[in-house]
Amino acid sequence: MNGYSTNALERLAKEYADLAIMSERKGKYEDAIKYYKKAAEVLKKIITLNRDIMMKETYIEYIKEYEKRAEFLEKNLQKLASGPQEGSQAQDVDIDLLVSPPPNITFNDIVGIEDVKKVLKRSIVYPIKRPDLYPKEIGWSKGVLLFGPPGNGKTMLAGAIAREINAAFISVDAASIMSKWLGDAEKNVSKVFSKAREIWLNKGVPVIIFIDEVDSLMGIYSTEVGGEVRVRNQFLKEMDGIHTKGSSELIFVIGATNKPWVLDMAFIRRFQKRIYVPPPDKETRKMLFKYYTKSIKIADDVDFDHLAEITEGYSASDIKDIVRDAYEMCIEEMFEKSIEEPPPLSMKHLKTALSKRSPSISQDMIKVFIEWNKKFGAI
Image 1: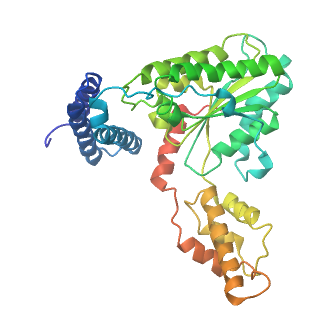
Image 2: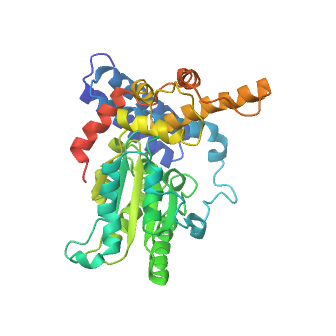
Image 3: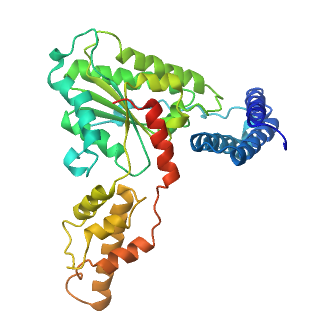
């Protein structure tokens, strides 16, 4: 592959991927494994030549997908060669099990990201409180995409907005749709939206359909084997249904992803609001440390400003884990020294916990999200 241009390598990778998909459809699983691996190998070569961070992330997702598919075929080669097994059909999902009351979380439980909360209130809360203010010609936004590094509150935001409007909450894991549901997936996707309409019509309450890991469903890197295309088309059709001009249904779809750059453009367009949920800045990190220690006795030497200073690159979830780890040291000390109460949480405890946990967010990762937000963000 030496001497190939990046464009030529991309074409070669696509050619191998197409051959892999075609081989799998024809039941030539050993050939499919070979071509998936070759496609991944070519993409790894491209990564060494390409300096575009966003493109590198996209190639990495392709590589993971192809290697994952090759591994699946290798593990199931004998079973696949013998044909469909009895009872191997995908499960017909009981949608009622996915419906729950609003999660017990409010915006006050989410530290920082005030700008994101404002957009969500403007997009969802206000139309529900006064739908009469929105002309039928323009309606209101019914699709919201939350994107950003993991561990910074995307799932919590979806739950909080459902609590704010007292909505029925239908939580769907997109990865499950593309694995466990495959076969009956089209029908089950339709059932999710039918259930949402049923709740709205019969109970008159708003409905939030929350799709976690939405990139698993609508990623451009999907190998498109076994009906995935039909599933995605069904989902697009259902989303078009809730966006119908003049529709007064209070049904909203909130998608969450850590990898927005792999989403198909057709899917991106269905989300009128595309909101970047950033990692905590210095002031927010300080607020997070204060929030997670508010019910803990702390020593006088705890310096929240310094903690915020030394935790750049740590997510909100990371900071929660650091405080938990540090407090566990206090409890351990209580038991080991046979004293009545844990000692106050000190700077030493927190720094020790911090030293054992690496930041989960790199500057390169943040650059990718900022770049994608510049191109596709919509608030």
